[in-house]
Image 1 (cartoon, rainbow, N blue to C red):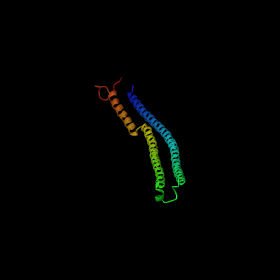
Image 2: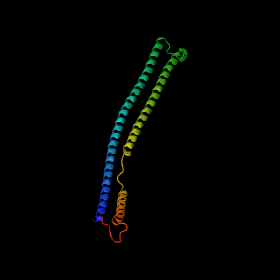
Image 3: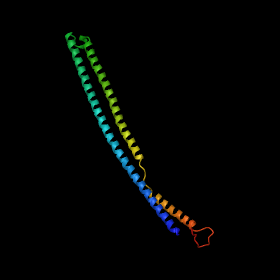
Image 4: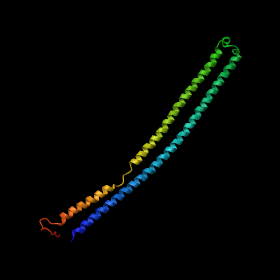
Length: 196
């Protein structure tokens, strides 16, 4: 029986196995890339929807604070007008502050000062809330970036062509060594092959 054909068959089998494994690894890499791309698209859509919802909340907040400012200014005008009417009824208006005693002007200024303090508190609260919305937008983006990095970190690499060639070459060398040592009997005369 000629063992050279057996060794040649083994080499062809090893080449086929290496090619099959490389093809399988490349298919898995392509599938993992497709899955990562699909997950990234989902993450990006969720990011977009989260920003839309947050923008709606922010718009409502801005509208609310705009109404609050209008209401505070209206309240200040109402209280100043009310004070003016009461002062007129008591005869405190019409002269200079010295003639009136300064109480009308000081009360009128006190109403304006309290309204200004309320507006300042409202503006401070609004700026704090705007900063919070900005942080929340940033957190949404950072979460999406993190999730996309996780999705792409799961991508497997394809087969390395050089590694496959080295595996085939190594298999060929090993089969050549096995052939030389396996077809020649130890101690046989030179030029004669062993019969098994």
